[in-house]
Length: 244
Image (cartoon, rainbow, N blue to C red):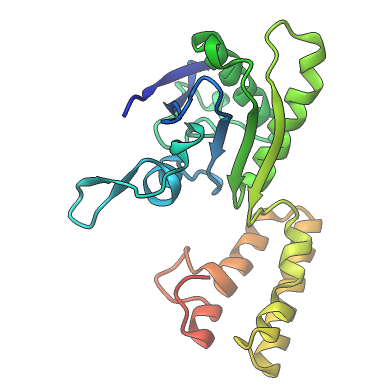
């Protein structure tokens, strides 16, 4: 199928570039909504969404490609961007080119989107949606808000119609605070395990409020993710589940 890929320079001073891969819809692309997909992480490549979740191709176990049976690209024009700078194929020549907050993320994405619609002006009037999952629960509102704010004063306007977020990590305090009760109610934790889980979650939240980011991440990783060490997390140990 037809697709376009390349780099959009979002900061010339530091040579910061965002990689994109664009798939026009297979059915009536001239009228189909344009959908931006952003992976989470932070630092997760949107190629995961493309090849694992909903893109036109699937990577098989023997590292070959096959067509996905029901890709989003059938009815939607999908724009996958490796975001922020430094993620996946996106790169910069200087550490100052990396985003340090959501304002930076939104700024770079906005620059990339304006360039995209200048390269593909035939899609600039199509309905546009910003979507993503997990940590993109922060990216999606950030770029959508910036588009909404700048549209009235910019020559190139983005026809933003809405956003969609899956399992969004938008408010860690609220999300982490509900883990213990949720896991208990669905039968994955007993009373004793629930109390321990709740205690660890409260400690994690306290570190977040004090902006002790690494300490908060370390507690959550030992409790749930298990990414920092070769040992299983507490969640993996008590539930036997490898995927949270």
